[in-house]
Image (cartoon, rainbow, N blue to C red; front, side, top):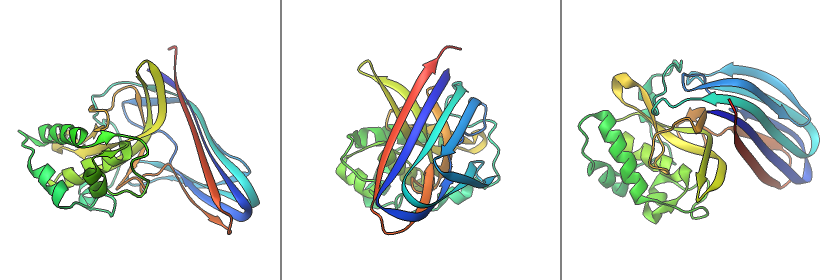
Amino acid sequence: MKLKIFHETSYSYDTPVRALVQSLRLTPSVFEGQRVSEWQISVSGGQRGAAFRDGAGDWIEGWTVRGPVEAVSVTIEGVIETRDTAGVLRGHRETVSPLVYLRPTPATKSDGAIAELAAAIEGADPLDLAHKLAAAVHEAIDYLPGATEASTSAAHALELGQGVCQDHAHVMIACARERGLPARYVSGYLHSSVDGKLQDAAHAWAEIHVGPLGWVGFDAANACCPDDRYVRLGSGYDAQDAAPVRGMAFGMGTEVLDVRVHVEEVQQ
């Protein structure tokens, strides 16, 4: 599938700030499931700094915007070709051991309910177990935008029984780690339709390390493994660690955030 992506993140401040420093994880991952044809990242008024590929294989760019700054936009425009690899992250080069992803974070910390949910699942092997955990998380949490916040933990989301893709991913990660499977959070895009209407959005899912097969993606929110509708950007221990845009504003202004994403399928 050939996808054209537009993603704009805009920040505005009621009082101009002195400067902004940002770390962007907005370049698609390099693996067999996707190939970039065109990709451009721009930051209004920004100066590009150091860029590097981290141990998890993600491309990170640093940007600085000198003030006074009243508004700034981070814009991504690109074209990428994707293909279905049944969720397997084949051909992705990284140096970090999968075992580091057994470490919990405040967002993915297990509790009694998560431990109970994970323990109730039986799998013939790690891959089968991961599939069944994803199905169990899908059943346990109804998709409902607005029910949770960015700071909602996996334990709280499971208690509510409602949430969005971030919550499904966090609970999936917590359950997998509870069963001894390394798990991490993945950020990216999804091109899909619901009730005949396009639903283009930034998206998130989990990856579970299942032995010789390596990392395999599981989107518990949609009860499937990532296919050619998905574009993978990067990964981390949880949503905050894998955030496509991270940064700091120097000043006292109140920040207002606006995000627009459009993913369009184009002719090959």
